[in-house]
Structures are given as structure tokens and as C-alpha cells.
Length: 265
Image (cartoon, rainbow, N blue to C red; front, side, top):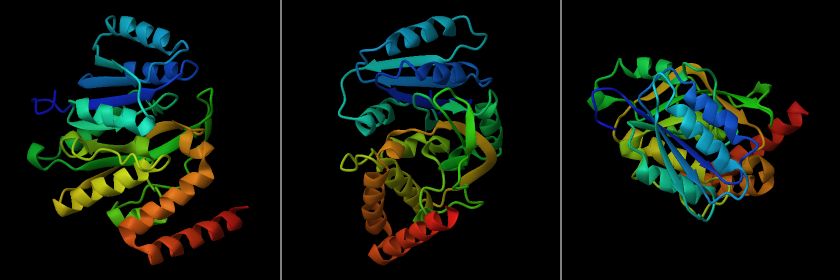
């Protein structure tokens, strides 16, 4: 799909026993007005009704005015980041974005809007990263609040010393870059934070832009794995930050996170 005349996206959805939440994710992709979409679903051999939801989605896709390409990978994995690496290895769109079970696009025109902004660039110099804002939703898909960490006006690798300022689901990456940067499976809860930093390092080395869409791109399910394992995620993030930015900056940043949390109480 990549390198064709029309810009294309791979939407990667990894899931396991997500029957209660995956339906709205599938519907969100199906509702996109942009049609050059590969929906890559990686299921870790779910034992609930996840596959029932997926099969219904595939059947409905044939009736769409602009059906999307749907690719299903169903096999055991060693966790969410292993499954995401499988998606990276198979993605064929020009850009990849992860939209996991329970997450959804903010509206039906998200990909159309992103593609329109990317259309201003020469294909050989398209941005390495496209990013935007995120809203949080509950288990029923209802709005909870805007994400507290707002995307910076100008994103750089060093922006992430302040934490994960861009939600992973609102961080689109050129597939030719993403496919060469698998998630580091040493990190159980914060490999996405490490991955985004490594992506941005490549962008800066190659002097490629990181495009701020200034749009709300994603409605993110608030109770993800990182949220449920908040303390362990923070400890991993500290170690990752130290690897990329040094211990002094990492410790200073985390001291500020503690102060910020106290101030907000």
C-alpha cells in the first residue's frame, strides 16, 4: 500500500479478550471518511467474544461505500508490545498509528484531515511524525476530560523530558521509520515512551519535520495497562528517561512530577 499515488494509513489494533470494548474501536475505523486505510488487527488468541466482534466488522466492511483493507493476525504473543511489534513488521501504509481496543478516532474525518495537512509536503520529505491532542473516555466511550498533558506546539525529542506529552494513540509515524524501530521488550509498561523518543531521535537526525495537526485526534480509554500499573510504569519511565537524557535530568524531571501532583491535589 505504501509508496502509491495516494497517501495511506495503517491503523493497528492489538487486542486480547477485548470483546467488551473493541466494538467501538472497529466502528470508529469503519466510520472514517478516508478510504486509503489498512486496518491491521493483531489478536493474541482471545477466548471471549472478541473474534465475534471482529468477524461482524469484516462482514460489515464489504457493505461500506469505501471499504478498508482489513488484515487479521491471530496468534499467541508475549504481551502488548510483542503484539505491536508484529503490527510494525506487517504494516503497509505510509503512516502507522496504534488504536487499541477501547480507543477510537475523535471523529469520522480525522484521517481525512491528517491526509490533507500532509498533502502540503513533497512525498520524499513528509514529516516523520504527525501528532495532536487526546481526550480521555471511560469504559462506555463517554468523555471524561481532556488529557492533562497537552501536546507541545513544537515537538522535539527533548519535549519528553516533561513526560509523554503526546499520547501514543495520537502519534503517527512514517512506516519506513517505524518498521525499523521495534518496541524494546525489556520494558513491560513504558516501551511506548521509549519508542516515541527513539522515533523522534531518527526524525531529528534525518532533519524531518514533526507536524502538529492542532487537532484532537483520539479518544483514549483511560484505564489502559500503563494506568493500571502506574507505579511500575513510573519506575520504568525513570530508567528510560535516564538512558536517553541522563540521570540528573531524569531525577529532576521526576521531582517536578511529584511537586506537580501535590499542587494539583
